Structure formats: structure tokens, C-alpha cells
Length: 272
Image (tube, rainbow, N blue to C red; front, side):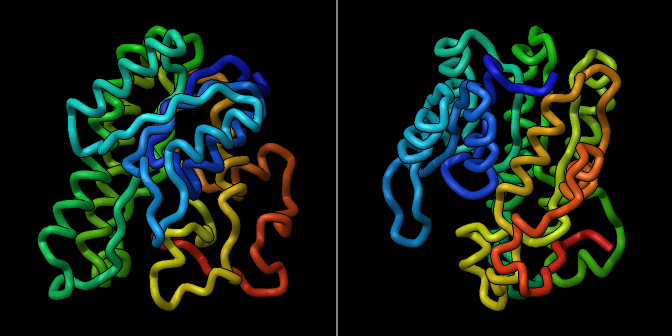
């Protein structure tokens, strides 16, 4: 399978950044995309809404369903999943992309930030999977793909920002558990993580990150497309890196994804 034509994707946090890039790549195949995110009105700090994303998906050739959805809220998630099934007849793919970030140490992490990260990242990924799985189990080639790193207990990734690392590794461990439970039932449950930092609007708000030394979200979108077009059977529990996925697909020149090819790249967190 080399296309997502006719497939239905439920993507969290798809109003901008990596989530939107994955949506647009699928749309170019003719896929249907449920855009589940909180942004239904314009924010001067973070451009892009679910409605902007829906128009872009439709312009790219896909079907779009903008859904205002806070994945911390169970009722909203279940309603969004039901609306997706009503609109498109089912769900073939879940992309757990939504994530909250706070790169501070313990004494500089308010508990409201800590709670937000745990609720969005690990709990949100689990809830979205739980809501989508009854439909995924009926799909011919179902995938759950979570934007999460390979699990690590190395203190160098925990000491600088324990709260965020716990939340992000929580997404990784949810992936591991779901893969063990549903992989044998034919659902491809895997994680994907970028080798280099991706230039998104959220990253641009973090002091000290030079966007010129990042890659564009399209590298993750192309890698996700390569993963999602693979047969789901016996393909689960993998913690994939975007570069490695693309190399397996015959792509080894990544210069087109660089914001500034003349600049050295910033490696992403959690990778040696």
C-alpha cells in the first residue's frame, strides 16, 4: 500500500505544526482528516485554527472535519470520535500528536503546568486510543502513531525537566502497552520521533532555540506517511526515528527539510 486514499485519520493537535503537516500529506492522497484541536478562534501568539487547517486540507485534496476538542475532556474526545465516524464512516488511523511542553526544572514548574502535561500527553493519548480503538479494530489496516521518543531512564533526560520528561515518556509507555495489547489483534501501534528539532510555532516560543537550525514539519509528515502506508499486521511496538524511516523508504538526502541548509542542526531531546 502506497497511498492513504480513502482512509480516515483522527489527528490531535492538527491545527498547526507537525499535526497539520501530517494532515496535509494525507490529504494529498485523498484521505479524510478529522482535525481535533482546541484552536477554533485565532490566537495572536499561535497562528492557525481548526477551520484554517480544514480549508488547507480540502485545498490539498482531502476531506476535512474541524473538531473543537480538548483531549483532557473525555466527553469531548468521545463526541469528536463519534462525529468523525458519522462523517466518514469509520476511523483507520489515530495520530496522537497533541502535546504540552514546559522545559523547566522542578522548582520552576508550577503544578498547573505539571498537571497540564500529564493530562494532555500520557492521559490524552490513552483516552484518544481508547475512544478510537473500537473503530480501528474494524478497519482493514489500522494504525495508531504517537509522536513520542524511545523510552529512556537515562538521568540526563530527566534532571533538566522532570515534569516534561515524565509526560513525554508517559506517551511512550502508553504506546508500549497498547502495542502489546492490540498489536496481536492487527493494530499497528508505534511511535515516531524526529532526529532534529522541528521548527513549529510552539518551539519558536521557547527561548534559546534557533529556528534556522531546525527542520520543517514536512520531514515528520513524510516519515509518518511511510509508516501509515505499511501493512499493520505484525508491525507494532516500534519506536521509529524520522530519518531512519525515510532511509528505509529510499530517501537519504534530507537537505530539503532544513530551514537553513547552511546551519548545523539542533538534535532533538531524548536521542543519543
